[in-house]
Image (cartoon, rainbow, N blue to C red; front, side, top):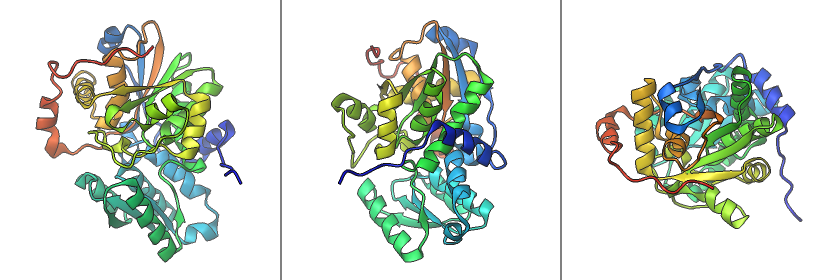
Length: 333
């Protein structure tokens, strides 16, 4: 029998906006005339790097946790995460007064692991790789009875992430295009639901070293990558089933960028806009500044997904992102 997926609707996204309002920030939208000039369009940056826990993940986690019935919530929640979703779920669980368990792979940045623990969750270590994450999470759920909140392949999480687009469209009426990064697909699928309903085009941006979404669009079927290699650690997850189903209907394409371009874009945002973003948040900026996604004459909403970065690695990282770095790939057509 064919599996039936529970997909969120546009009304679910708007309901989530009301549900999470007491617990998350309505993040600002910033502009930069220098970046507008560089791409020949108008760019509006939705700054989820200023969100609770430092990333958009707070939206989905809060919506999921506060959607639980009391008896479900009492058992606690569990997930797997390289850091941002884990911290967000831990924060949301703490706000509701319930326990949380987070499976964290060994290759996750140590400071992101520390963030998860700081918000009060029990950290469960596992080996790198998606199958190891899933196996460890299944063991935790069986042993604790906790409700599993998947980091992206969950209708409640997707609806919560989509509230970033709802806010952006309220703050900047008349956008032509929405651009957001894609890893597991929670952010792009939720935002695409809201944006397409309002008549906007939607494009995803992805690291070339974790390009399962791009491959999925090329083949017409969901591609899963067991291992990935990219500096954008928040985008290493493989595309979820619900996320892929929504992307097929609401996202027109995926732009791939190289790690050198991601670093250069991150450096440019730090230098020109004076705000701190992490590599995953720089991926859509890299798609624009590289010229791979032409936006001349367009008004573009860009989701800056987060700002959780290992500060100890900054000097060497930004040295790799100087203007004489790797050349841009050809434009997306």
